[in-house]
Image (cartoon, rainbow, N blue to C red; front, side, top):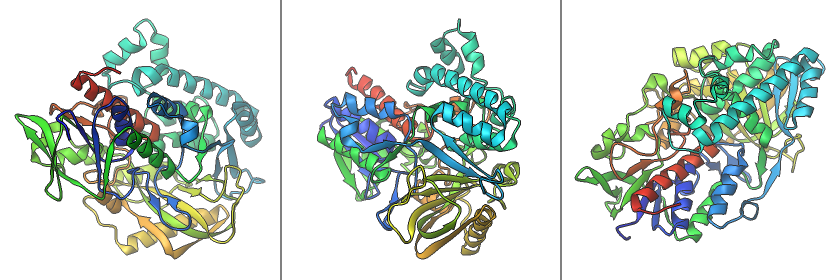
Length: 503
């Protein structure tokens, strides 16, 4: 490897995005990934045709069109996508449509408004339309000034938006909680639950997260796609794009430490003892891995770990084959808790698994309308939220069993009987997520987005160690597949500036 080469630690979305951006510019890139496949949290469990056991939703298509397009590839050729018309099905106690316990959220705003009216009354339609309008306004204000740009502070963000555009700044509602702001649009508590769930998309409580996260509603209106072959197909396509431009991928290897010379990152040392020199290193790991010493003592000061009390949600997941009876699942179905606020109080206030968890099921043999392919047991990912305590608590078989029983109580109370195949089901707890992503405690989204300043507390691409950069969902611009992908591009741009290149 030449002295101008770049080493990327981790082949998650951030690492893959950085690899594409750099290799397409002619920079020699080596990606070292301890897993056997690319994707990071976008992992697949080998039951049936493979079960996505991480992110399950593809949004913000423009991020990937730009990423592949700048590398001379076409997203349509690299990936087979089908746009969903129904974003998700939602259920409450007695999940029958006749008794008002079921609601389908449609991608088309007019169809969604009609559904809101049928579900909750005409007065809620006006609130829903105002909600979407304000969500779009927030999104448009932050897309280029925050999400796709290097990390700003509050004053810098105001400068980027424009000090003369105060209405746009005030419309961000950073000082209102998500739950509080939703009360301005919806009197029906079920709709507040439904749209408050957007806070959990970034690992946060709707009772503590800022109303700014309303922008996710606009993101979904712009399109949600189903990926043929599962989400892992996206990671593989990104790997192939980078490899086609000369990036080298080394799977099944792990980096033990980052080496510095005169305070600058100059090489990585693998667990096999191999030293790989680099002009720059991009760590696509959880940001807390550095401060916790997982990449060596020399770079512990590069980034502070997220304090345990400020971590985002973790989860307990069941990825496996199941017999399903009763409630009609769609690709994405959410079964809401009857004790929603208590759910988040248990997780963030008491660091325990809630007694009545909200349950998310991704039925991966079904499309967005619930049409089923094949017969017999189907592939499902079941998820309940949990506290990120995986580095200080080992979940026992008894605790897992109790959590599973709590999940089944919720499902059965909404009309679904789910029989998981014990021989074909992988269970992952916060302890397991900590093992997969060291330093995180099992937090799946880095720092929780609680309070107006949380987004500004996330680290940016540059660290305190020259030549060492960060990418991934635990740094700016935040959690989620498209955001982590944007972080990789931002890190790559910083590296190109270091190398004297231009975009």
